[in-house]
Amino acid sequence: MTTAPAHPQIGIPGTPWGDAERAEWLSRQIRQRSYQADVLSAIESLRPRFDLEEYGRLDYGPDSYPLIAIRSRDWREELPVVLVTGGVHGYETSGVHGALQFVDQHAAEYAGRVNLLVAPCVSPWAYERIHRWNPDAVDPNRSFRDDSPAAESAALMRLVAPLRDSVLMHIDLHETTDTDETEFRPALAARDGKTFEPGSIPDGFYLVGDSENPQPEFQQALIRAVEQITHIAPADDNRKILGSPVVARGVIEYPLKHLGLCASMTSAPYKTTTEVFPDSPSVTPEQCNTAQAAAVCAAIDFVLARQ
Image 1: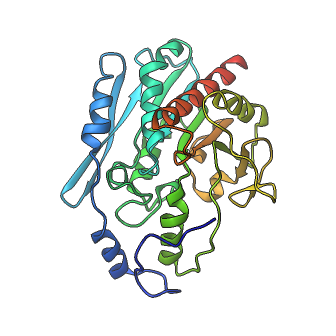
Image 2: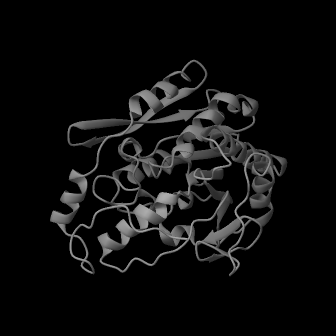
């Protein structure tokens, strides 16, 4: 069942937004939580155990956001590199806090076995406003390409560029929420001057693999780990999730590089995007964070077992 769009109409239906419409949209965005209190303070608490690196700074109007990555302290060139990203869509809360939970509770288990690079909150402006886009109404997770229109994506690509061909595994932590259907997809249609086509939200956790390099055993290892914590999204009556064919239990595939998705930014042979469903009445925020952390652990365990 779908619901009517929750956002007010901006612009003329069927006409893509211009500068005036984007400015109107921006004027309606309200800070609802604190990047400093929620994220930077948690990252700072990790300083005694990990190296922290400011890899960029976003200056949006009166607001300035340092972008912080977390690195293994025992970084060694001969070790494989594992990349963990979260908060590319700022409103997807467990992507951020699941990444931080992984570092705090599990990263030490991999010391001396992998080089860890974690960017837990790629889009802090959107994190504070619980939104999918940046202030320019650009989706960072469609912007991982040359001459990126999103400063968030460009900063992360610069950080990762020296390691691009040495990353063994990249896991990008996301959520699919009910507001995707009630707010963000209608807004996307309005922004682009298209007709909103109602859909449905998958009830449970699923993964998005790379259609150009599927790695089915890798994806299923993560599904098995996460199903101990939260339920796996079933296919719909057409054997699809969000309009994409289900290739294995809880797994769909996208052409990651073609779409400019975060998980496409390296040459990693193993890559995936997690999708937690936080709006289920049977899960808690803590379970969502734990599911994300478990997925990261399962991903690293899988690739290490094959080294």
